[in-house]
Length: 462
Image (cartoon, rainbow, N blue to C red; front, top):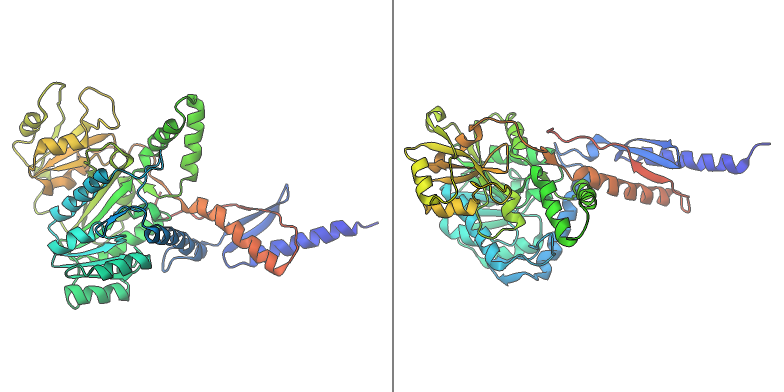
């Protein structure tokens, strides 16, 4: 005799599967053992071009909501030009010291001004930490941000020769951004510097990073620069989370810490990438672009100093043959005076002094911190760099304009992971929520299976 309850259950399961499969964000849905419904996202839902798909838009909207709330509460607002809301240490959750953040801002301003910009477009300007300091020193400044509160406050500040508009990082070519540049720079005039600082952690994946870079490089004028600042280095994720977990539980056994670190890396909700990921993206761009990788040289030892770096993309060919740059390996010795040692090693120039162990990450006798290098250079025309392949090594280029030559001194395979992309984990969390709501609206009271995302389409760079 047929079991009607089994038939009814099977029919309900088929209807739920069909409903899930019919959702526009789903490419395929199929039942699996254990009452699981496996779903594969539709590629259009996670696409970036020609426009962000719905799951990418939701990822960006999540960060916009986070920062809208952070800026609105203003708990770290020391002054109109020093709003440090949201800047907290990962290990303690406490606000990062204001003196450290002032140093962080000053070093970023130094990096930008070293490129000698006149017309700057900052994408993701936030509370204006850089806008307040840069706009008075430029012929024109245009800032964009995803949050209304940031744009409204900066508009109200009436900064000289500046305009602000609500736009996402990939929208450098959007009509509203172009209109703001027309007002500030002049009709049709392009920026000679595009800046994106401390924003890439909010990006969903490398495909979005590639879309931003191509847009920014298309927007900037010939001979200009694109600066991507405060990037989380993917090869240092285990170091970063290991330090966080050990600070939280100093007595934990090493295997327990290792397991927690692996879990933290897998579920990390921020984008991180190595310079090699950008190098691969640039290979597809029609313009000549030279890349330099800059170390963070603040005095205070925090995650912003240890695990982050800056990129400067120089648009256009080198002013002369880079093969004429002398390459010299570090020959530092304990007890020697660093300023005298650097002076001897950097003369005559142009020269790249490479293979300098980073004392923040390497415990060897001849290691030096990025801050100590900057201090020893004492304002000389030189740049403190990060090895493009190994973040535990530093370099110095003198004069600073030869910084891109350090990417080839010596040529080496990248160390560690290329990138950590948060979009797959976001999709695994978010898509089942969307589908449960979708099914319940169509089938009130239905017994929901466990929905598992089977696969998330890969980003553009691997």
